[in-house]
Length: 436
Ligand SMILES: Cc1cc2nc3c(=O)[nH]c(=O)nc-3n(C[C@H](O)[C@H](O)[C@H](O)COP(=O)(O)OP(=O)(O)OC[C@H]3O[C@@H](n4cnc5c(N)ncnc54)[C@H](O)[C@@H]3O)c2cc1C
Image 1 (cartoon, rainbow, N blue to C red):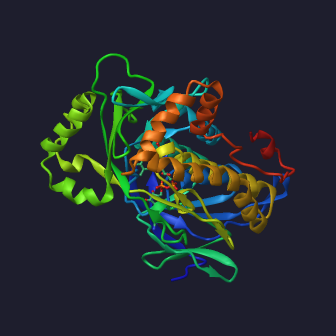
Image 2: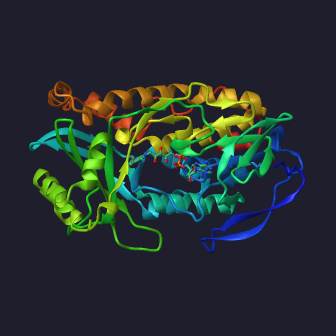
Image 3: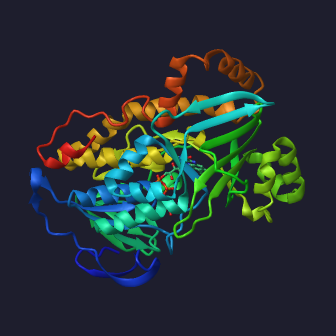
């Protein structure tokens, strides 16, 4: 149902109250105006109130565009455990105004360390720039507050089903058939986007994840620690800081599992599984003590896929809607943040259609590099291969002492092995001068 000139009832989240309230939402296009730098004010509709959607919304509001974000959730509820924010992602969070809140809650990570049978097989130091590990709820909260402060309109309980082009305008169509017209629609609805033509290749391994309290005494280490057996077994402990309004330090724990083994795992008595894991890595014991039911662990499956043209007419795909990968390199959230920034940069410089091309080009090399590396690294740490992990361990022992190797590894995990956003477009507005 098209409602071009109407006022609709929808459910808008009031961030101050953190609950959903039915309110009046004006779905009209805002009046156009030309402002600083000759840029035209656009009406922008965003499908997905996750990492990429909130970042893009904040950045585009900062530029003066009218932004409406739609999400299927009833209340703000990020799914999942903890994740790593790399220095390149922090730059974007700082630009949005979410950096301070993220630093307040996140755990600094100086090192990624992995071992097999007591031998070090992964040891990457961040150098001066730290990575940050954060609970998803804390990251979401920081992004959400920034987007609300910037003036984004956030509509919940709004499941997007299509984004048709009607009379030159891209529309967001909801499950209830309401349709909203926009100058630009951004698909930020993640790995299960119904709008994106992305073809995803499911990966054979996923992982069981949980957020628990930091269980060991003493100082929380600034380290992601992993244990391996070949590539078929992997366990990890990652400090992820605190939840909003809480002071208890949390940890994300994970256990690699073939997707095909998940049904069996659900049938296995929990205590048997816990005993297996603890035999494999005794340090997991105080964390696993907090797991009382199978449901306390969430199974995440992964896929690989890249959309080579992440745009269509008046439509941009960002984040996991444009590219998916395993979390081996800890770059997914960063990629979504960088996409949002690249799109915002392109829209400052160029009219929409040229900006979309520019957005895609500016991210192409960085994405190709990290998608390629991720495809290579994933089976090295999660697969049933026998030779690959032996090569991994041998290669590590040979080259890790070299300064150059360490520098390259630091840059890989920091997310800036190649320039994250490459662009030649130069607008006249002052906004550009503030970009890195
Ligand atoms: C177990 C696991 C561990 C990970 N670890 C890391 C890590 O350490 N570092 C890292 O950088 N990345 C990590 N990632 C990847 C990272 O979580 C994603 O890359 C990132 O969240 C992508 O952001 P996004 O904005 O594209 O999508 P999301 O953050 O997934 O947001 C999508 C939003 O769209 C909404 N939505 C979906 N469909 C619809 C619809 N039809 N209508 C309306 N709304 C919709 C969803 O409710 C959600 O709010 C990990 C992923 C997993 C699964």
